[in-house]
Structures are given as structure tokens and as C-alpha cells.
Image (cartoon, rainbow, N blue to C red; front, side, top):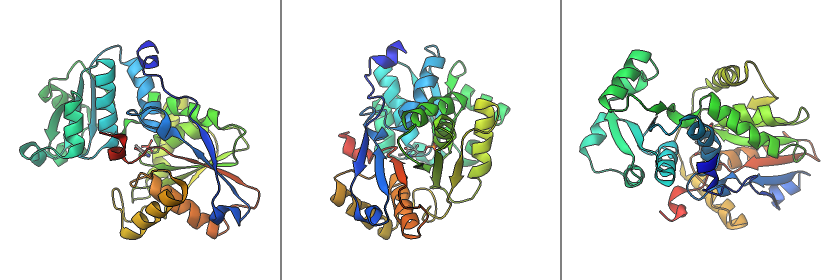
Length: 301
Ligand SMILES: *Cc1c(COP(=O)(O)O)cnc(C)c1O
């Protein structure tokens, strides 16, 4: 891991106990697993998922995929700058090519990522081999190492096993927000048999159980660990942040002095408070909550 070691990741990430009456009065202990502190630019699960891919790429350019506000695209672009690897970002939405870049894409470009815009129907079909080959050809990235949208391939999932291993013996339940579910698939595999993982999907659709099973099959050859999902806390879908969720997150920030990333982490924390109030966890349970990221503008960029 020579190149990556020079970036000095803070691993294992810190584990902090939080005193919060909403959990305390139910007899629960709440821990925060601060993956947001692993690295200032390769934040949280993005580090855990990208690191094994960077090792596997053998110095080839990295190409990956994302929407106009993708955390994964920004993390890949930052990795490219820090490690001197060329990166290409395939961005959903041909129409964006003719507009000024939004702040997220501008950050990617400033980090040296070459942006290649594709129309939405091509983007949807990007995992079909002939469509992918066409996109790579058009992007001038035929020799590149391809990381899928959201970064969740087998290398990434196996990389997230270390998150579970760091939490062995520390908690009964480990909760985290899920996009592709790659982090949960790896985390569950790293926990001890007495522990379980609880995922809060931030996308609407109810397709994630099958997706996580497929990721574990592809990464480990079969199911691993105990995990469940609670699909009730997506707040209408990806990137939807209604005012009540925003107010909840702001209140959490004031109580605890921890910046709350809105698209994933806020939904996780809200879900945990709701589950606690429903009595979902028996008294004496220790719940560890994975802080997978932070609001990116607070990174000083
Ligand atoms: C990318 C991301 C996730 C989702 O991770 P998956 O492995 O795709 O489930 C969760 N939290 C934050 C802050 C993220 O940026």
C-alpha cells in the first residue's frame, strides 16, 4: 500500500461514546464510529472502498461514474490528485456539458479529473459490455481501470470488512446509511457472530436486499454475517432533504458538535432515534453508528 500509506489514513478510525438523553433513557449506549475522520479528502467509506481499488489498478488511469453531486466522484478525483493517477469521471446528463460546472463537478475538475458527460439512457445501460466499451472509447479511456458507480465492486466490499473487524466486541448493533449497500455488505462480513448490522437505505425502491446479497456473493462467494435493512427512512429518495430532516440534523449538530452530512448520515441518525423511541432495541444494547461522511463544504474546499 505504499502510495496510500503516504496519505496517513487515521485507521482504525476513532470510536466515541455520545451522551444523548433520547438513547440514555431507553437504557442504550450510543457510539459513533468516526469514519469521517479517516482522511480529510478521502472521507469515510470512500477511503475504505477506493483504497483496495487503487492497489489493484496498477497505476492505470481510474475511470468511474456518478451524478452531478456524487461524493464518490469527488473522492476519486481527490485520490487521483493526491496519488498522481489520471482520473476520468463519466457524468450522468449530457445537458450538463453545456452549463457551468456546479461546485461538486468544479472540485472534481480542479483535482484533475477529466469529465465526460453522457446522456441518461446511455448512463443507465453503462454496465452492458458494449455500452461500456463505447463510453470508454468516447472518453479516451480504453486502457483505464473501471470502478463502478458508487464504487461498490468486490475489492471495495472486501475493503469494508475492516470496518466490521474494528468494531468487534465494541457494540451489539452497528448501524449505517446505505446507498449501493457495498459498505454494509463488507461491514457485516467483518463483525463477530454475536453482532448484527442494521442498514438504513437512503434511496427509495426496496431493491437493496437483493443488491447486498449479490455483492456478498460476488465478494465472498456467499452470504456473510447478520444484517437487516429498515427501508422507512429515505425521506422520499436520494438527495431529498425535507425541512424536518434538516432541522433534526441541525439540532444533532448543536447537541453534539458533530457535523451531520445530510444525504446519508442525517437519515441514519433520524432512523436510529425513531427506532429507539419505538423500543426496537432492548435495554442494555450498545449501538454503534457509522459516520460515513461529513458535509463536503465543511472540508474547507
Ligand atoms: C457513499 C456514501 C454512503 C453509501 O455507501 P454505500 O457503500 O454505497 O452503501 C454512505 N454515506 C456517505 C456519507 C457516503 O458518501
